[in-house]
Image (tube, rainbow, N blue to C red; front, side, top):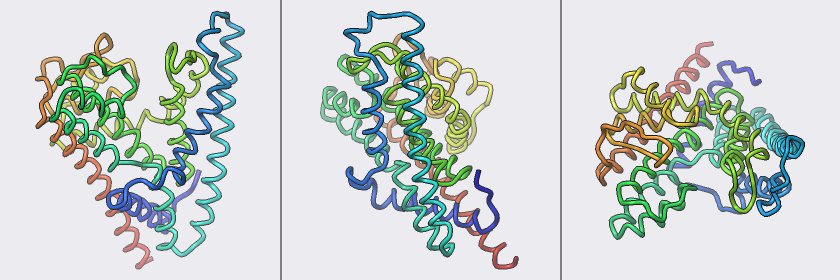
Length: 329
């Protein structure tokens, strides 16, 4: 764990501001230089060795299940070790430089581990697609979600896009920044690795021709653990952006989803917008709400933007206060 004194607080908050500014004005780095792409490449390679091919998965039993569980767990830990070592080395090197330079470099290194501009753009592209046709909206939604979008109605496309916006506001923005605040660049990299592993491996049953029930179990539970607090923080930020939300109602709605975490930001978004969000056969959030319209998609992006602004203001406040303390200390 990295201990933070006033100088380190200044560097950490400054790095967050740099990362969010770069995300706002420049967006994502090239694919060939993107560390999350590198993580995904490793997980794709390791996953093909950990998860059995569906066509031959008739071989069952506890020994086989445990074999694939431990193969998945070991591959997860091996990947995490590589990510942690690289991130730790980069953080320690940058932190030894003068504070403003350290904040700049760490912010540039942190940026690829969060993605607010891209998330908002993808959600807005879904609504732009719907303005042309339902089929165009479905095609854009397929970039955001893993569910089958073939038969979704216009309203269901919007529901899925708003759900993805709320869930990924946590996964792609709040949680990486939270873990950066807790443990520096290694913390943000750890979270991004775990979240990407869950996205690629954390499935029940078959996906992409392989059975992930046991091979992806460790990855799914690790992401649940690391996302527990950030997901609730994200819900709180959305509630704050909307002027408040009863905690009891939020807790009740969040419990309707099978995930221990994703239901929190999704339930908060459903309630502050006054819309119904559902995954057929799985859950319905804010059932008494109206079907989402184009205006609700715009409001959802605006509310998420206010939540990100709250993070910017918090980081700026810490930076300014720590700078003031440093000047008088």
